Image (tube, rainbow, N blue to C red):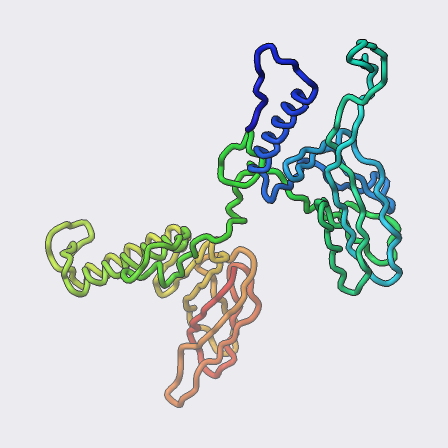
Length: 386
C-alpha cells in the first residue's frame, strides 16, 4: 500500500492529507476485494414483504461490498413498489442494489478566504462522503413460463420477486433472496462448511458411493474405496463366517469340536456335531423369539409375540360313535380366536366304510365334533388360532 512521505519542516497542505486518505482507502479496497468472490457481496440487505402485505417490499439494514467499496444501509429502506400484476400471466421482477457516495453531515467550520490576509469566515460545509446503498425494482415480462429480468451492469442482484397473475399483494413466499453473500471469515468455527454453518451429512455431494450387498459380501477384487452402512457390515460378516464354517465342516481344513459342542480337540467335525450345533442355534433363536413347542402326538407350536402370537395345535380324540357328538380339547388355550379347524377320521370297516367326522362350533379351548359316518372313529385334529 502506498503512503505519503512526510518531510521535516515542510508545509502540510490539504492535498497531502487527501492523498493520505486515498492511499488508505485504496489499500482497504484491495484487501476487501481479495476476500470477496467476484468483488461483490452483501451482509444483511434481505428483501422482505410488508407486515401487512401489499404490492411493495423493503430491504432490511445491511452492507453492500461492490468493487471493494462498502456501502451501509443504516435503517430499513422505504417501500419499493412492485408494479401491478398481469391479468393472465406471471412475471419475475428483481430487486437490485448499487453502491453510491453521498456528501452529508453539514457542519459549521472556519474557512480562510485569503491566505495572504488570513481572513477567516464561518461557513457550513459537508464533512463526510458516505458510502450508501440505493435500490431499484426491475420489472419482468409476463409470460406463461416467466424468466427473471437481466441484471444491468453496475448493479448487484438482491432478490427475485415472483408476481403471480392477478394478485394484489406480495407475500414473503414470493421473494427469493439471491444476493451474493460475504463469507464469514471472522468467527468462523472452521468445521468445513461455507459461511460457518455446521455440516449436514444429508446434504453432502460428491461423496463416495455406498457399497452394494454383492460388493460387501465379496472377499476379493474390491477397491476398498466405498462406504459400508451397518447393514452392509453385517452382510459382510455373515458372508465371511458362512464361508469359514463351510470350509470347516465340509473340508476339515479347520479342525473343529467333536462330538459335542462343549469339547475342543483337533477332530474333524462329525454329522452329529453339525446337527447338535444347528439344534443349539435353533433353540437360541426360538428363545429370542419366544417360540415354544411340544412335539408329541398331542402338541403345539406357539410362535410368540414377534410372530403375531400364532398358535398351531394338534391331537386326536377318543373314539366317537356313529351319529354321536364329541370334542377335541386344545392342549393350550387360544387367547382370542380360532382361525382354522381341520379334521380327519381314523377308522374303517372291512367292507370299506369309514367314519365321517366334521368340526362344529369352536371356542378358545375346544372344538365340537360330529360323526356322520356309518362306523365309530377316532378323529385327528389340527387347529390354527391366536
